[in-house]
Amino acid sequence: MIFKTKRLTIRLLKKEDLPSFYRLQNSQKVMKYTGSMPQHLAECTTDLKDLITKYSKTNNNFWVWAIENENNIFIGTCAIIFNDKKEWEIGYRFIEDFWGVGYGTEITQGLIEYAFGHLQLKQLKAYVDKRNVGSVKILEKLFNYKSTYWNNKDNCWDMVFEICNI
Image (cartoon, rainbow, N blue to C red; front, side, top):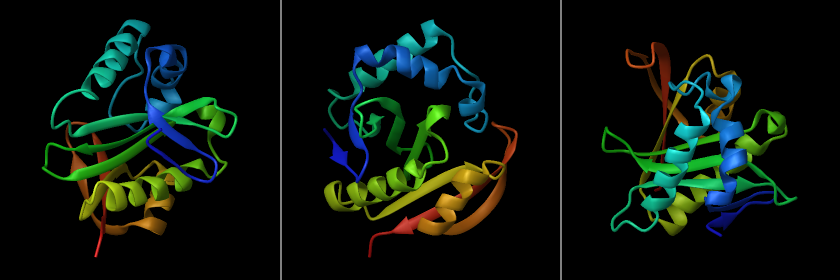
């Protein structure tokens, strides 16, 4: 286990997660605002293996974990990564059946606490397609809005949020 929140357990991904990971990554609705297309089973198999392999790499700075609910069901993934802009960034994805019950806010709070408390990070960023209204609302509550810019790669307006550990 990496950390827990009131209703969620965050743990390392494992190969047995493939059916649920595929359900997450293959969903048009889940992937709509990620800048990626839904993945086929072969892509999910490769990605899951790659993410698991990263756990054992020295100086790994790309952490993607499984999220389980209170019934020990895989419901999504969350991440703390060192992005291409040399910033620590958080993110999460949930299987559509688990939207709208407050898990997004809960996992964001958990990621903040883990990043600042356990990892001793000083700053976190979050990037979100401004059309992703649910995630925008969560970030507006928990982070500070910094800017909006046109993301050529993903062909959307991205909002940038930041929080600092003082």
